[in-house]
Length: 374
Ligand SMILES: *Cc1c(COP(=O)(O)O)cnc(C)c1O
Image (cartoon, rainbow, N blue to C red; front, side, top):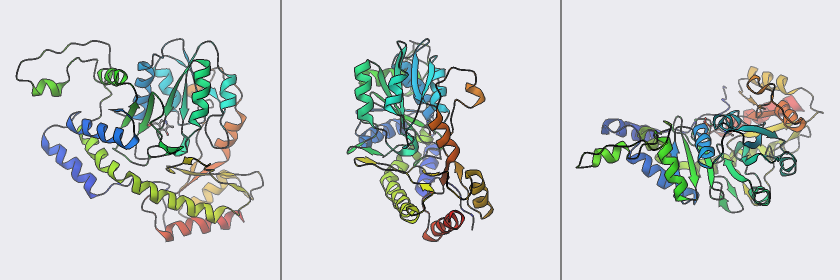
């Protein structure tokens, strides 16, 4: 049996949606993008949603529109996918790394120790789909008069205190990369509270152009566009958006299924003493974009050896979330010691979780992991 670590849930209706757009003759940002934005905002319970080409460009654009620029510091976890820090650098600012807790999310107490006069924002990541304590960060940011921006790349459909992640802050960024719970191939979305922010995001994602090509196309009069700011090309295509619309319809079902699989892992592993399992606190609801376990010191084998042995049996795994500060791209930049981030990154292992994952596949993973750790 060959078990992948993840795979996108794409079915016939998604392929049909892309097919129909291709034959419609309008393939770049257009009516499908607008529909996808409206339906995503409605799903999240946000007032606006702006679609872009990826979560990386979503974060970059959100930071720019939030007013982050050269000389500013933005606090984020090092233990995240590297795009979190890269977006800060792309916006011209300095990424200041803070420590995370056992839930893989930023540690609010440590964050407060790295705030300086230059700190403009905290970029809060909901790592692996598990919501961070948004209220605690909101309180800190309000008190220290800094912005709170959320990287919810992995957290579409996750809930914090009964509300969807994406409904709490001024800018919340999502990813539709195939590794996430729903996909458009590549793609991103920003949920925004303020319609003025949404307007500026829409302007900047398309070259700062005053009239978009769809409006020009629909106009009976000739229209000359103006270029109001130095913008970007961060558009999502209508082909991607059409797939996003059909994927979004399935999101709740996908999350139910993912949670069932996560619960089964939980029940199977709770008595294995050397494993620490993901912790979902009261009021938190993860979409289980990833199921990552931590291997304690007392494990009979090391993390890398366990990964290799599982691969030998046909089971793909991945290391836990990376740390950016130990990568060459960030070498030589000042950084506080981050022992917990390093330990979590070095001792965590991502187990297979995808939809549909049948019982015999999951049982094979469970039994193989058990055999190697007991
Ligand atoms: C995947 C991911 C990103 C990047 O998303 P893209 O859509 O691939 O640009 C950013 N931050 C986190 C935490 C991620 O997991």
